[in-house]
Length: 566
Image (tube, rainbow, N blue to C red; front, side, top):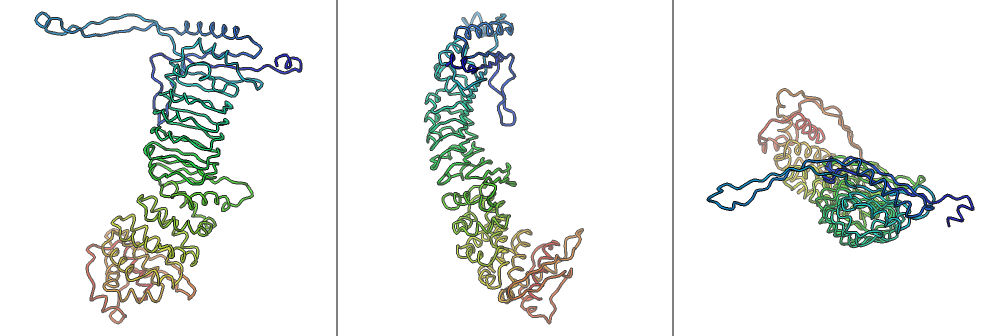
């Protein structure tokens, strides 16, 4: 091969080792913002060679440079040792004797990292040469190894794995690997394992023995599965399996519930997602062709959709909807929030509405245990309800009213507000739908929330009531409900808090098939006159709310009365 390259003008294969040395008394790394940083190198040794050189020449050059560097960086340290000798005779020596010894000892830099690269051509390094080079290195103190194409599993093939007992970071990305040894499980101190951009078809079960592992990157391979033993790596923070061939991901994430922060599954033909709900620390996820990120408190989400340039955004979301709605659970804040963001676009919302299973999932999510999931599910349902009456019919058919009732009956203010937001959205459809929504039981719930709910809940309940009262039948039902009209009247007549300005009510316009009147600015104060219908019934059941109305509560109550025509 070397002869042919010389004849045809080719260049020999070129390789380089970069070896970094650090203090022998320093620990592996310190935590900075959740990331481990290696101490700064004291010295760096670079060794380059070509395939035309003999092994003896290369090894000799390494030995010479290593000896020169170690001698140059040698330091003298003062070692102080204090020992307490046991008391030989309590009568003669009542106190223990302390011995102190001081001596000067040489301190040599320790080998900490090895970085192997191929500089020219496309050949592979000689295993025997690598073995000879590593014999001249003290491997027990090595923290990090980074390989490259042309080197393969040299760290395992040329030495005993047990020699790398201090290894914390193993990076064999772009090494053209087709297999990976099970002996990796012997690297008990390993925290970071990167095997990206190789040709691996499987990962060894020995990975499950890596109790300290925090980062596993095996993206851009040919993996069809991951070992179930991975669940034993309970400190895993990041798992990257993007762009593989994984269809069935059998992975129990419950042992990782407190540690897993990032799970990347982008570009895999997954049949379903693993159960994510236990993973309370998860903030970054990629599935199908979508990447999702959220802040720590689940208040902001970023959703990035990848796809072909000629595809519309809606079509790009088909893979995500097919995976999440039909074959997976959405009971996780990261997925629920992403869906809420996606549904803000009307075209996306229409795409969701076509998925019958999506509506079923959303109703189940609204009854979930996580507040963020419930809030985001109700937000998405609200977007769907505002599309058209047909979608509202689908929601009602899938028992959304039962979900709303459960939320309103909850003792949680957050749940009550979520239920009221859905109720208001459903009320924007038509008079006929409104009549179905405002049952006697629902009316009683609204009355209870207006009377006993917090100020925020009371205002939301009044808004929902005003939306529902655009239906003639509902107007009559509200007037006839015992005590309800009286409560609204009392709220509208209550004096506002001191030092608060009273602003005119906002303009609201509502239309339907039968035509609805527009509500223009309402007067700042409105009372029922004795001659008006319902006055006697209202005053008969009037009762004190127990506190002064806020401006918003008063204006919302006035809006209800305006819709009722009172």
